[in-house]
Image 1 (cartoon, rainbow, N blue to C red):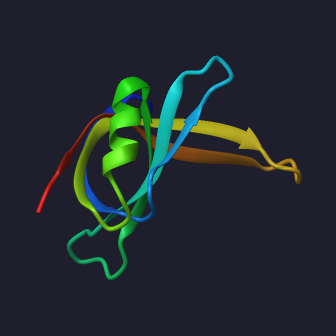
Image 2: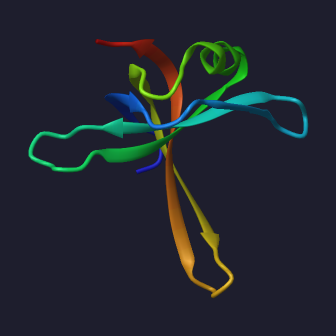
Length: 100
Protein backbone atom coordinates (compact mmCIF):
# COMPACT_ATOMS: atom_id res chain seq x y z
CA UNK A 1 0.00 0.00 0.00
CA UNK A 2 3.02 2.30 0.14
CA UNK A 3 3.07 5.09 -2.44
CA UNK A 4 -0.54 4.60 -3.49
CA UNK A 5 -1.91 7.92 -4.77
CA UNK A 6 -5.05 9.23 -3.13
CA UNK A 7 -7.25 12.34 -3.14
CA UNK A 8 -9.29 13.11 -0.04
CA UNK A 9 -11.95 15.72 0.68
CA UNK A 10 -12.73 16.77 4.22
CA UNK A 11 -12.27 19.23 7.04
CA UNK A 12 -9.28 19.85 9.26
CA UNK A 13 -9.65 18.32 12.70
CA UNK A 14 -7.07 20.67 14.24
CA UNK A 15 -4.87 23.59 13.28
CA UNK A 16 -1.75 22.57 11.34
CA UNK A 17 1.43 22.25 13.37
CA UNK A 18 4.60 23.52 11.68
CA UNK A 19 7.83 21.89 12.81
CA UNK A 20 11.37 21.34 11.52
CA UNK A 21 13.56 18.27 11.29
CA UNK A 22 17.01 18.25 12.92
CA UNK A 23 18.37 19.45 9.58
CA UNK A 24 15.88 22.37 9.60
CA UNK A 25 13.62 20.88 6.89
CA UNK A 26 10.11 22.34 7.45
CA UNK A 27 7.02 20.14 7.64
CA UNK A 28 3.51 20.50 8.94
CA UNK A 29 1.02 17.95 10.19
CA UNK A 30 -2.75 18.00 10.59
CA UNK A 31 -5.70 15.63 10.72
CA UNK A 32 -8.42 15.47 8.10
CA UNK A 33 -11.96 14.19 8.72
CA UNK A 34 -13.37 12.57 5.56
CA UNK A 35 -17.14 12.01 5.52
CA UNK A 36 -17.82 8.74 3.68
CA UNK A 37 -21.29 7.95 2.30
CA UNK A 38 -23.03 5.33 4.40
CA UNK A 39 -20.75 5.77 7.40
CA UNK A 40 -22.00 7.49 10.52
CA UNK A 41 -18.62 8.76 11.72
CA UNK A 42 -15.89 10.38 9.63
CA UNK A 43 -12.67 8.61 8.67
CA UNK A 44 -9.65 10.35 10.14
CA UNK A 45 -6.40 10.74 8.24
CA UNK A 46 -2.99 12.00 9.39
CA UNK A 47 -1.56 14.43 6.83
CA UNK A 48 2.08 15.50 6.43
CA UNK A 49 3.35 18.25 4.10
CA UNK A 50 6.98 19.17 3.45
CA UNK A 51 9.15 22.14 2.49
CA UNK A 52 7.84 25.59 1.42
CA UNK A 53 4.30 24.30 0.82
CA UNK A 54 4.11 23.26 4.45
CA UNK A 55 5.10 26.73 5.64
CA UNK A 56 2.43 28.35 3.45
CA UNK A 57 -0.43 26.02 4.41
CA UNK A 58 0.46 26.09 8.10
CA UNK A 59 -0.26 29.84 8.00
CA UNK A 60 -3.56 29.78 6.08
CA UNK A 61 -5.33 26.60 7.23
CA UNK A 62 -7.22 26.26 10.47
CA UNK A 63 -9.45 23.75 12.24
CA UNK A 64 -12.71 23.18 10.34
CA UNK A 65 -11.44 24.40 6.95
CA UNK A 66 -12.82 22.36 4.01
CA UNK A 67 -9.95 21.17 1.79
CA UNK A 68 -8.85 18.52 -0.63
CA UNK A 69 -5.56 16.72 -0.13
CA UNK A 70 -3.74 14.88 -2.90
CA UNK A 71 -0.81 12.71 -1.99
CA UNK A 72 0.54 9.26 -1.32
CA UNK A 73 -0.25 6.78 1.43
CA UNK A 74 2.78 5.90 3.52
CA UNK A 75 2.91 3.12 6.08
CA UNK A 76 5.38 3.06 8.92
CA UNK A 77 5.72 0.40 11.57
CA UNK A 78 7.16 0.46 15.04
CA UNK A 79 7.37 -1.87 18.01
CA UNK A 80 5.71 -0.60 21.18
CA UNK A 81 6.88 -1.18 24.75
CA UNK A 82 4.93 -4.48 24.85
CA UNK A 83 6.79 -5.83 21.84
CA UNK A 84 3.77 -5.46 19.54
CA UNK A 85 4.33 -4.25 15.99
CA UNK A 86 2.02 -1.35 15.17
CA UNK A 87 1.37 0.05 11.69
CA UNK A 88 0.86 3.79 11.30
CA UNK A 89 -0.57 5.24 8.08
CA UNK A 90 -0.24 8.82 6.94
CA UNK A 91 -0.76 10.80 3.76
CA UNK A 92 2.29 12.63 2.41
CA UNK A 93 0.54 15.52 0.67
CA UNK A 94 1.68 16.78 -2.73
CA UNK A 95 -1.15 19.29 -3.05
CA UNK A 96 -3.75 20.95 -0.84
CA UNK A 97 -6.55 23.29 -1.87
CA UNK A 98 -9.74 24.85 -0.59
CA UNK A 99 -13.18 23.33 -1.29
CA UNK A 100 -16.69 24.41 -0.41
